[in-house]
Amino acid sequence: MRVYLVIMDETEEAGKALRFASRRAFAASGTVHILALVTPQNFNAFGGVQATIEQEARDRAEVLAMSAAGNLFDESGKMPTIAVREGTGQAVIREYLEEHPEVAALVLGAADDSNPGPLVSHFSGVSGRLQCPLFIVPGALSEEEVDRLSVPDNE
Image 1: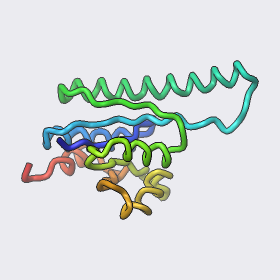
Image 2: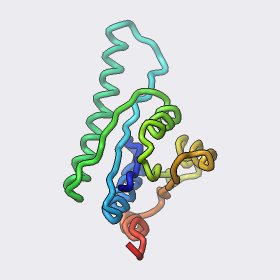
Image 3: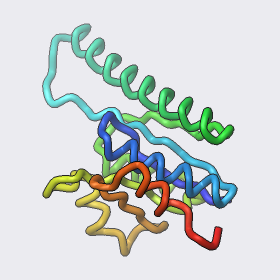
Image 4: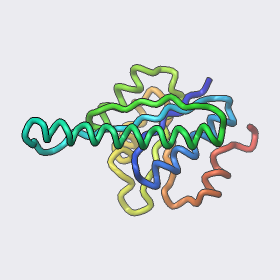
């Protein structure tokens, strides 16, 4: 079974990557893994305040991942695997890929401006060393274009 890993955040490009991955998975009788990242805070507050800030960030990531999973379930009838992890994006994604050798492709969405985003920049630079193919969904694509490109003609 093909497994497509999508990194979920609040950006439009993440939504396009999820749409691409879910349509590819559906066409291949595969599934989607959604990984939501909780970025470590760059500041330290007093004990209880810091813990509250960190918990709110985790809760926000969980709600985002669950919402995306619910939408995907409504469309495909399949519930994706959801993971919420704390850490820097690159390290967490590499660790997840090592733990999940069944992942057939990492699907990232690129921003539609001159800077595609830190994850796309990093993983496109090391794609030759990844244990799976990397799909980058351009942010400038419309929903219809994503749909058209996500399912190959022969599937």
